Image 1 (cartoon, rainbow, N blue to C red):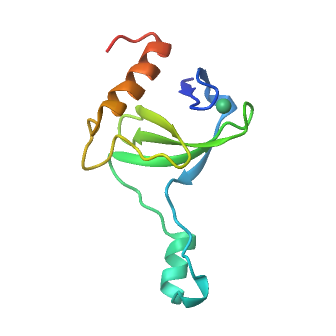
Image 2 (cartoon, rainbow, N blue to C red; image 1 turned 90 degrees about the horizontal axis):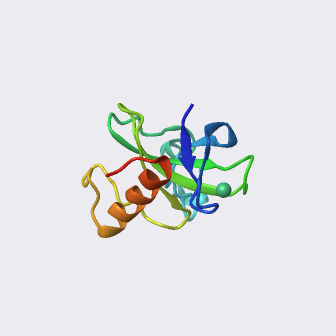
Length: 118
Ligand SMILES: [Zn+2]
């Protein structure tokens, strides 16, 4: 079992309270009628499957019932950060150690609640 930090509830909760919903940051085409079949198919069915940093959409189903994003490493399963809808990730494939002081703040918050010293 592991614990996940809900950015809305502000605390670590057991994983059973959460459900993954797939890749995060999938933008619906602004004008679907003008999409080609290939573009629409890509939007509906095709997702990234990286080895490394991945951004995922999760819902706190047995808690606040809000959607949020998780940045997770697909090899180690480490959760690097959680962040609210509309926010941008601090950890990306281009910046795997975080690209801002916000990244350090988010990671420290999660680690502090998990009882880990960074
Ligand atoms: Zn919550």
